[in-house]
Image (cartoon, rainbow, N blue to C red; front, side, top):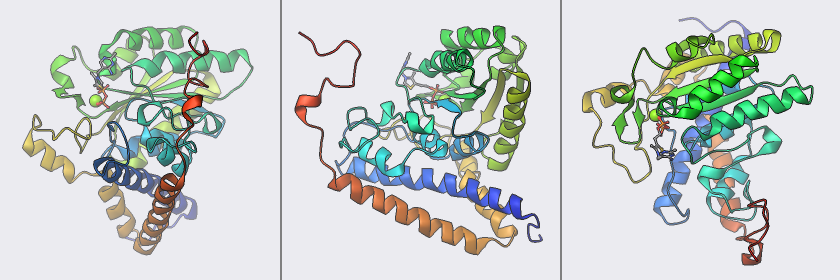
Amino acid sequence: MTDIDNNNERKRALALHRTMLSIRRFEEAAEIAQRDGEIPGTLHLSIGQEAVAAGVCSALEPADLITSTHRGHGHSIAKGASLSAMMAELFGRVTGTCKGKGGSMHIADFSAGMLGANGVVGGGLGIAVGAAQGLRVRGSEAVTACFFGDGAVNRGPFLESLNWAATFRLPVLFVCEDNGYAAFTETARLTAGAGPAARAESLGIQSMVVDGNDVLAVADAAAAMVERLRREGGPAFIHAQTYRLRGHTIADQGAYRDAERHSRQELRDPILLMRQRLTDWNLSQDVQRLQVEVETEIAAALVAAREAVFPEPASIYAEVQDIGAPA
Ligand SMILES: Cc1ncc(C[n+]2csc(CCOP(=O)(O)OP(=O)(O)O)c2C)c(N)n1
Ligand SMILES: [Mg+2]
């Protein structure tokens, strides 16, 4: 293999790798902190799926919006949410993205265009379409990317949201992050027909199926789709085929998984694949530098989270609902 000759391509590849590393190290650190009792509640980790978040968000501008899922750390980081505010949120501290009152499944950072994780499977779909409609009413040309899992395509909001977006040609990039499982069930066993992209195509929505563990492939697909959304309106659909290397939640050992498939997928870890590619391009030193940089950032986020205070009990009803405190 030869050096990668184009400087822009090199920068782009390293930036994508850096985003994936940030997501991986953030979640590994959170996993330890949760097990040590520092983070309350459970976590849904996206370890193994980082290329989808990194690739898709690389095609977005700061003004663009995303909606996410219960497995949303990667999407938030890739869209530019602050690592320390996110870590503080997991720790339940006042410096968190939701002042410590939301936690993992409610992380939102409007300043980064991240409209929220969502504990309701398929819950982000309607929000994304509503946001896109709202942007149009305001005369904005920003696009909205909507992440959802392979389990969500079997819920009603999937059809409603795709139909609305297609009818009004809203610039929404629907991203099915297909990790093969809906909780403890292999999704293919519960999904009729030819798959998520075929469902989108049946509504006239242009779709692509992409290797969701190849960050360059995801980034290229997303760039092409987003460019088209900006030029012609939308929507568009990406079915990103990936794999979850951890359990459904932090407590799940994944005993229901096929061992052979799992071993095969471990070798297709998106970070390993990209690191190999960067090494082939003689960029090992840059990879090491990125690893140190990310490590330092995560360590700082952990220190800041531990040092921050918890929200005042008196603030419990503030900013969490729109009906005010109960009488
Ligand atoms: C409406 C609704 N039904 C059921 C659940 C329980 N639940 C949480 S995650 C999950 C599986 C979701 O699978 P998928 O959409 O593929 O996302 P993944 O967990 O694989 O990222 C289920 C059924 C829920 N949170 N919301
Ligand atoms: Mg899934």
